[in-house]
Image (cartoon, one colour):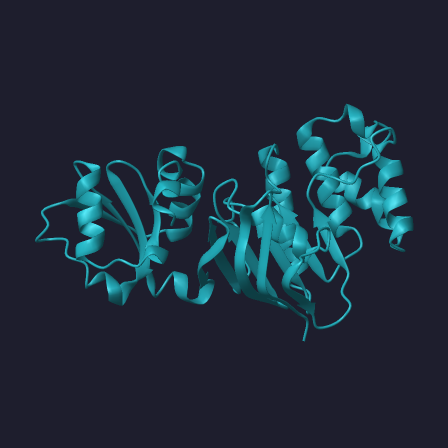
Length: 295
């Protein structure tokens, strides 16, 4: 069974903690979605898994030698064309380059194949980066914010290809993004990262049945602190907050322990948790106050 294990991994840059004691497993036949605001440590984690970076503290173990395809918008020869870059990539990794034409046509890049990478728009670079990652049919597919800069057609195409890729046996997909509601695979783990730490892992088998998203609205920030302390709400349940609103994702059984009626406060239960997460991660109105609470 293919598996990646991170054990007590820590990363510091200029004495700043980027990743703090990360221990997590990634198993075959699953999609792992890393969720967190910019600067939370998602890209660093992906760079470690893809072996672009090395860790001095902790361990990263692969159960066997695995081919890793990485989409991170980097690793291009800027003076070469799209076609030349993909050809060189296939030769370097001993991939069959007869798939290049297929992938360029899939992403409507065939007519642009002779264009130099340096002349491409950000969206076009993203598409070429995805092709580089998937063209060799790797064991592990790592995608760092794959939908940034893409039009709706290209975004849907990448979702489609991710869904097809994971249907093969023995594959692992790890993606950092908050636009994942169209993924069809039944085995998805949502890993929430904040301040370099994994706060919670929720799998798709449970997220729709056992968890609930609660938005509580207050008149001022002092009421939020009192509410959190009175109800003994664990910090791993607090996904976002601003001066007047608090977002909590927790197990349905624990929701019954939170005092709502007697507090005489406004609240809303959000049924679509993934959609709620997407809205929060992209909303600086919530994110900017998380750091002060160190959650």
